[in-house]
Image 1 (cartoon, one colour):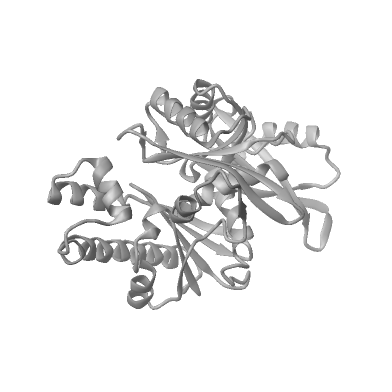
Image 2 (cartoon, one colour; image 1 turned 120 degrees about the vertical axis):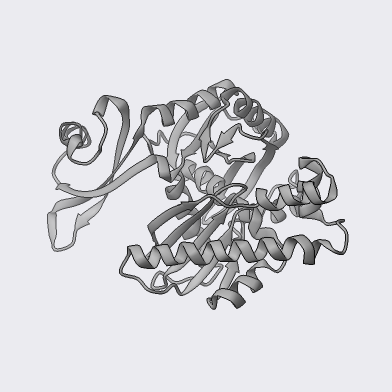
Length: 352
């Protein structure tokens, strides 16, 4: 199974995060996308740890539940492995090589690019285009992951009665969604954009420049810290705390006693991630920040981040400009929209 193989199949996207499974099926007319089916199902604690599936049966059950809720009938799915589990590298290869010849050459040369024996990895490649001023050579993106990382994704889908048609890379899926979304957010390719995907347990910084992700880094911090604090402070279950966090109904003291402290800690983490980026690259600033992930839905977080970091901030809305089928709850999907970056990118693979 290649990491970004595409068999031109009619498929849908499956995103497995640390707290939930999200599924999306899209249709397309001209340049216009439509969300035909959307479903989500919560995952039990520790079914996914640090973006690694640890309890396959529970993940399969959640995928199955999300698919049923959505009403999806297709069996072919696209799923992603996390960027931290994948090694990517762009190399130059002769342009006149066929796909089979490229594959053979890369297999022979693999030890130059990857630190694992070739028999222990899933390796794939994508020809990006000719080398500037040298049309006899092409830029080729290679991606590899330990076979066990790919196999567990296939196993989770098969346990839900589905077929793993595409195993993508999370950062590539987000990059595809960003390209679709950037015009609506008035983001230019010339700008350096820090896209923070703030999940339940992990915050991932993707720095976008010239339409591509040039830097990715995970930090162990996310919205679960806020959920845990709500549980402890107000004696609620995890489900009750998660619902209260999204829909309100907590005591008046919540904002000053709980939320304010969490927001301050989160923004400190975002600022720290930017400092790591500056120290690891030749860049020393970003032009804009985009907040994505479920935690980005916290009211006022964008304004507070902009005020404290001093960079314009916008909230990701990957379904901006999309139509939605009448069967979908408009309010629910709009609320969830910042958390759909990966699954939208995966669902779009059916149109490649």
